[in-house]
Length: 295
Image (cartoon, rainbow, N blue to C red; front, side, top):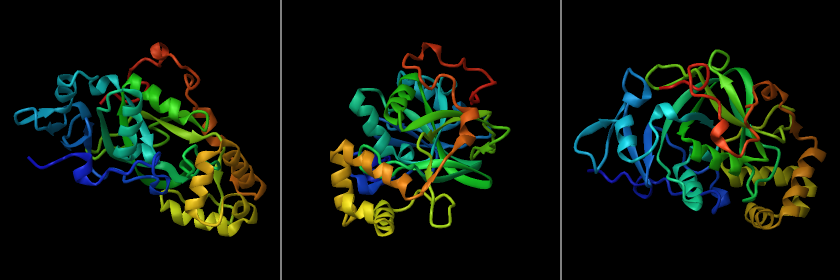
């Protein structure tokens, strides 16, 4: 069987440890992340749990739900779809997050087309020192993104790594159509939006996210004397200084605002998840057809 390990497939970037690799290499095919393997999923004209997967353990193909149950993990119907706009779509990064806490990393990761959302840049400097991606609304946009299906323990880990810089919203599928490779539309999915707003470019429109981090940091340094004095002269110095000192990160974040680069994102507030501040997940919204679609 072909080696489907994260390492063999080239998904080893961990931006939390190597900030200039942000956002890492994101998946471009439907997969089941499982124990540092990326098992290819066979797209079926049925709900996600009925898609097929082949592993080195099972003989022949089995359904995704059967594979998850064999691994002792929640089936698709017991999981929460989350739209990822940055490094949470990179297997190396998410596997690292879960390994660090001791939570199993098994999860489906599926490319999905999302209408009404584009990828920008959060108007703050992350704890690792990079400037991370953040969504913003654009009714005319259709953006290829990745949806991860998280169980409750995984969702808590991601919440804890995203808060307080990001807040979680629930995007309804009738407002933000989300189309799977099978053609199925999701009823809804969670997304994390920046509590700081997004960075604007020279023309006042949001800067595009998802590109090379070193190039972005060079552009920001070139555009701001204050940033050059604090974090310059180059991207390597930026991530070293910002990643090692919280006060420096906070000062850099304030400079974004002082330079007039901040674009607020109040559009997400009506969709903010009611449970966004919960730390205990017994009270998560019930899994039914009115919430994230049960594939």
